[in-house]
Image (cartoon, rainbow, N blue to C red; front, side, top):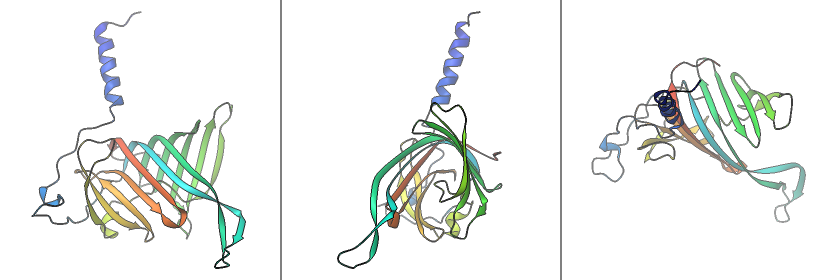
Length: 234
């Protein structure tokens, strides 16, 4: 049975919509928050919509240290870790953020593998580590691999008022690779110790975040697109 031309056209149009990675900008920011304008005034940190599901891409680069190899510094005689590797890790997929359930789920692809990773923010340690359960499929493997343990998550669970409680500093209007128009950047010390820049659109939706750790020589940049705001089920 052959598809009629109108049906094929409709399917192609729907596919084009699904693959669109540059959604229309949401509203406009006032001119009073544009840098180098005479009437500039730093805005107050907004409430943010943080219950949503979204496509994402994330790039993390960092140094990995070999814990087993420790040497003495010839100058200070202090022990230090030997640098093992300069690593780069890119992943993409789909994220579910649910503050109401205290959970984040990441369905992602990376390095020839597919994985579903669930972070349970209702089960954390005093050091801020989060219980993580990962189910992954590797190329050529007939069965999934399951791992669980406490980790330092690359997917923070932000509360709606995290910018307000964190006394965030406005970082100006910026552009992001996968979005049209400008978004607002906000700088905070997340959990009192991690420098985070959060990106929020004109409708108050979180559209990405960057953070770094000087001590670990780590940086993570994350972009969201095709975001659907509202309750999610994990």
